Image (cartoon, rainbow, N blue to C red; front, side, top):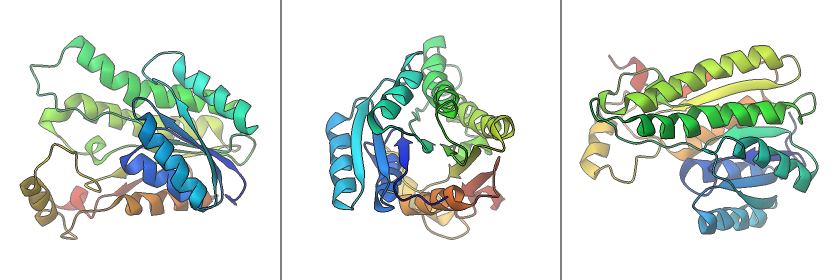
Length: 242
């Protein structure tokens, strides 16, 4: 896919990896819909960075945990830009939830944002995308590993992998759907330096990753016109370390 001049929606684009993905698309001279929930000022910063890089951007606020918000977001983007060619489902929550303490609300909070919202966005976007459109879902290494204190999160990300496969089958040949499962490319804010050092030491490539590593995978998947239904693991080899 030639990205220049096309329109992309990136969810959770106000900060962290989502911002890096949105900015990278702006650098490709795309029109970028920068979605945010609570981080309005950060989203505006993303918009400014994209515009400085030569792309066009506008921020869109939406609480994607609300059942009608995903489809409404897609419709707002199409109404604003007149088209939608690429969706990057990045918005998610990662919360430590030890087994025995998870409530029904905790479960629903994770699943509504991490799994239901990307599906509903993809469903709405597919009705608007032209032939040749592409969707990239951001999964997580947790989809393939056992993290005892993050079981709901892991289940939601495993669901993203399976959802990617299902959507790729349903939407072929018109729209390609792939996913990226990052490892330790950007540690949670509440993790200590010691935890980061331990992660680095136990990663086969002996370093932590960077959001740019996820960006490179996204750009590959958007341009790889013969790839669909795949999940690229970007983790420095952590998945195969045992």
